[in-house]
Image (cartoon, rainbow, N blue to C red; front, side):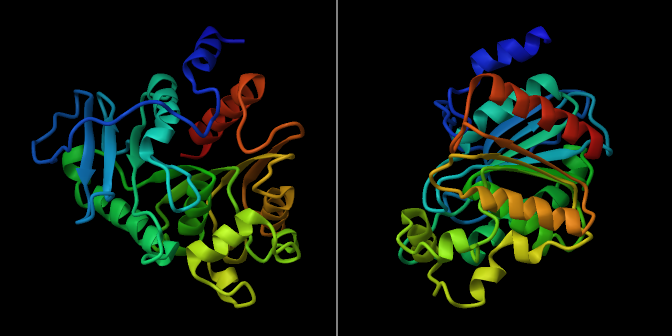
Length: 288
């Protein structure tokens, strides 16, 4: 087992969903960048709201063929922060240094602001911002997504239903909900997480709107390669959220990989985390 993988386990958060890192002050992106030099900037604004910011990490010696990996944090659509994804950012920068990395915040849902389509619109704004600045950043239009929990749901939904220019070359879901019409939810309306979904999206669980916001119901044969990771004893995400998505991708002949960890819940560490990072790195390098 390669030494850097073992070192990474020590550096990575105990949970794949938690990070203790923090951002610096706001950054305005105006300078002309030298593609021979690495570049980092925190809290680049892509909208008027204070949550509409992202962190940018550009590699040295990048070219117009350099691909970008976009990280999307979880938090039940109502909480969370891009710092939660810093372990992924660190791993990608250290072990996949030829890729650009963008770690985003998005507007959080509350009683006055529903998650959908607000958060999907924020992802679109980030992608458009990168496209508008690709000459200065010296990057290509090709992107990939790595999302965790609610961020995984948003990554899948945007890639399957809202990527009108087919820029997404791969997408990763780590414990992401995929199908809000799953009987595991609908037949168990006392499920606290499902009630939170209903409240967050402001929807009636019997309407077709559940399908509109479900990656499972939006995926097509043209979907990008997809890699899925789930825990079999996850108290929030039923196993069927992963297995049904896997089966649908299989039916459509979409390139995909699926890993279910039998003894893991909504996040994991140790050897299973090592397994996740190894598989994710190979998948990104193969498809992005």
